[in-house]
Image (cartoon, rainbow, N blue to C red; front, side):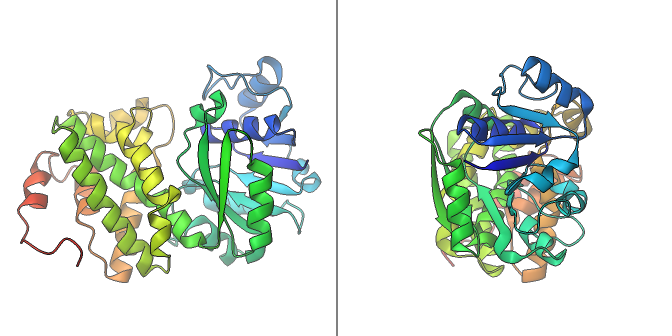
Length: 330
């Protein structure tokens, strides 16, 4: 059993802390919001996120960063937009502690994945692990079976992380393709918005299936250009996470697309969503990454124009369909 810290008590961080505590680890859960810390410690409920579920009594919530000096593993569950701040927080960790990123997004200034960004900030590559796969916070909190991938350039680090998280309800696989696992978890959020748009416009399941399939092609081409292994995007953190996020009404990114397709303004949607939809900020970053590597991503391009209110949602359909005929895989 390990001493583990979780940074960030949003929906995902709360669920991870709960899961790890149920695995009999000692879990310190940090958040800067004193109301969240107090709520978990006194009522066992997070007053802002996933508030209908009780957090395991073995989770100690805190806003004291000194706890990072007492743990062998730090799990990062803050949004991608906070990567610069996250790197500063992680400087408080012990030099030999494993850092496990549960972040599904890209760092805005550098367009790096979370692990790439942390390496650039001086963190040792073999201490870093990314942890991703189709797993809603509510499913972890309810104890439903889920499949996850733990990836690191260090096989030992990936396996140690897998052992900490593995449970009767969580199957954990390992990988050395950190870039593929991270990009799968980040890029699928953009395609999920597109799938939600299709549903919001009332186009039916056939349309959604086409978007998911062709969206996976865009994800795979871009990830390969960045150095990922193609098979990773066909696995849990690519196809698996995409199917979940692009088809479920519990998906924040699908919900953003669905409501946009129904005619709502993005500003209204984000103000009432209740939590972060990473795909909104990832969409332009995916575009910048695609431009850097010369990869065409037509579905992503359409999503960005709709988010920026440059084109109505229904107008993008004709552009995507009325393209020249070509081989499916070319």
